[in-house]
Image (cartoon, rainbow, N blue to C red; front, side, top):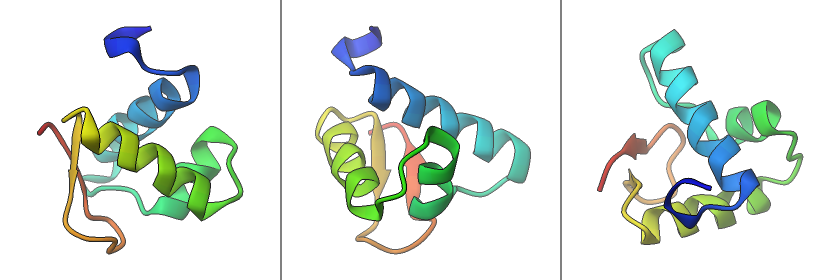
Length: 71
């Protein structure tokens, strides 16, 4: 696992990178969930919090499409 991430966190990072490359904007929490097979927005938010703690993403609050790569 890269950076000691769980398989789900790796899938979320991949989904974010791919979405930004395809769409030019960050995905919403629901869009991330759809890509990685999570129906609960709270589960996605939990993983985003862990990724943010590791400095792999940044978010401005809990707004939709606020995910940015990097710390």
